[in-house]
Image: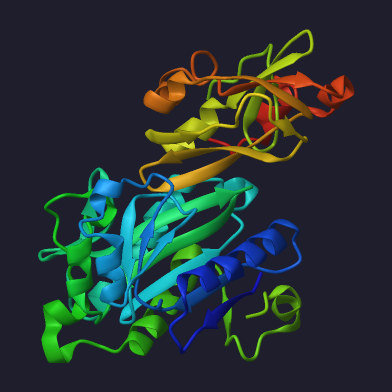
Length: 233
Length: 127
């Protein structure tokens, strides 16, 4: 069945993206929309997952605020993470079918999407046993955290394209001490692609790996089924 | 996949063990194997009134979190507080020490809607 890829061209505040996901997941559970994947960038934010460990936040909340970074307690899985423009975020709202009730397979798929996207730009990346995400010689380039609600997926993956990595110094990302983070830009310099280019590649890989075709749309021009359930600003 | 015969089940992979009006509830072997190493459990509070189908708990592994739904309506009679410090018990013994919460049934007839072991086993993906 065809689904939708929603491309956001303006950075989306984290709370807004959570509200959109909440509406989508309820509608997906009710079978009133098809699988839908959000492709977006967030305004600068440090999020604390359910398993939040305050000691993985390395600065006082006031210091984040002074740096223009929001602090947000999220319902997603995982620990502390950082989002900002220049990081492509993929939020697939997918029903894992009865025959692919497979959380491991889904994690593997998200990692594969990141690894193949890196390969498109000549960057070798791989899995690291015991840690999720995609890793290059210079560190972690893609972080994954998802939640299942009646086998519908929420949250997903962030992929560093050309964000300011300085924001990560405020946290211990995902609670992993001593693991550096990197981006396509930190690896490729001026050769690094734009977020839009990466988004296009990532959508292609998503379709191939997750076996779903996605029609493109934007939040300003939603198909009827999504428009009906889309939360107001 | 282990599916004890004397338990009842839901399509969302909870198990239920009935004793009089008290239902003991946990997640199945299949569910724990899907999550792999459980690192965090969020439980309801004793006394909470819950309805069948409500999200009442969360089980989280390294990177996936999943909601746990109450299969029945009633009041939370007891929770397994050991899981807060030792969430890995859910992996080690999902049908025994890994129980999550107990509910005193308000509508005992709801139990008739639950799956027996055979029906649950047939609902699982092959292999």
